Length: 151
Image (cartoon, rainbow, N blue to C red; front, side):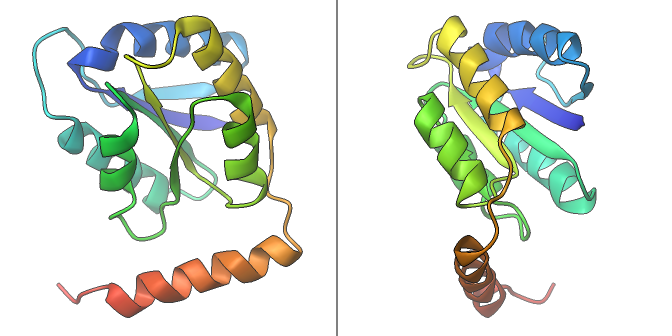
């Protein structure tokens, strides 16, 4: 699977660890930065990750900032993205099976490395359940289309 990943400076160390895990698991990884501890604004990187996921069928994204919330909010502004901030394996599995999430956001300040690794494994190994959940995804898309603006 192609996984696009990014982080702000606060998530840089966790991102480096997760890139190693993703490669061990056999995934193709595209790193959108940041590539140091120098301060950057998470919306800039989250937008790159989300845009790549929205444009490439089958790609998924992982974005790491301090809490995971701001990146999820930013990524969800990109049409076609369903980003979920996950803090445990339950929310990771649920976001994929019920909500067809295509971007995972993590908080480096509220999620330790070991649980982050487990969240990523569960998130990537879970798949959309379809059926009754598809109706809800269609409703999400209707809301998205209703509020999209022409450029």
